[in-house]
Length: 193
Image 1 (cartoon, helix red, strand yellow):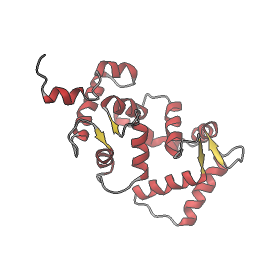
Image 2 (spheres, helix red, strand yellow):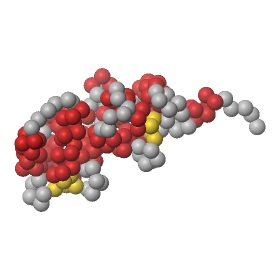
Image 3 (cartoon, helix red, strand yellow):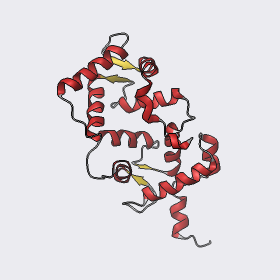
Image 4 (cartoon, helix red, strand yellow):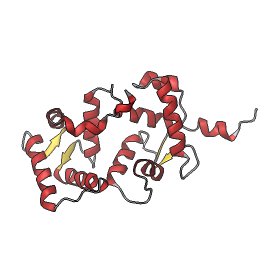
């Protein structure tokens, strides 16, 4: 039995071949390799185990690992495909694929729907939408009155809840997002083009 260095072990933990990841995503092999460098920086920022923990993810996104953030928590949960509390390299690349300019809009719309469906019921309910609007405003350091937030939620439901049942299903969300492309403008990282 041969010796295995700790560097090889760390690389093996959650590591996947860039060629395979490039075939499964919209990224080129070079982009996957660049993402691996980014992944290594993030995964070594707090807990040096080669995996991205929630605190490291939040630190990378928002420069703060301590502040509770619903938006960051939701994105982390959607990136953690194995639901094991950490993001491995393959999960990182597959999840970031949604932000590639060449990823079909239908996939971006579906991801945004899952982001807002906080309870995983298959519907976006008023309270879920309000929680996400407040989280996004908070992260943007924008302050709106309670009335203004209610107006945003009311207008969204007026436009999106086509059957008037008090919740937005995935088909209604698709129609709403198609009519409001600005909703998904942050779903594409233009410098990947």
